Length: 175
Image (tube, rainbow, N blue to C red; front, side, top):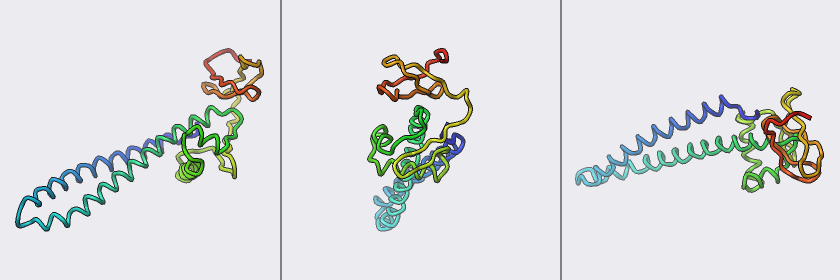
């Protein structure tokens, strides 16, 4: 597992809490602004509160982006778990994530720096995933297309090095 589960769960909870609190405050701020706009004596006071509403909306959008990035950490984790040789090029990661290559690299750097993704090393052209040494974590599957042996993580999957067929460990007997 390459995702730091407790850290990502805690970060997501904090972000959700911030969004909920800011949303409630923003709602009441907007109601107050509307009240002031329709009160002749305080009409100008409403315009002084508008920047606070805009700042609150900006903070909500910023925290929603952080939640989205944390969700993408789960996708990166699944890519790492399905890889059987321990090396994923940035080009292939970007292609599988549907992102431009530079954005995928920035996200991986951010997630590694924040500690959301672990056991990975970012190189010049690829990510090296630190494979565990536990022999029970891996399983050898026989490719149904060409018959070659492919080493994959238990419960994970991978592509055959010879023909490219995708295989998934579905609890079949070990080779």
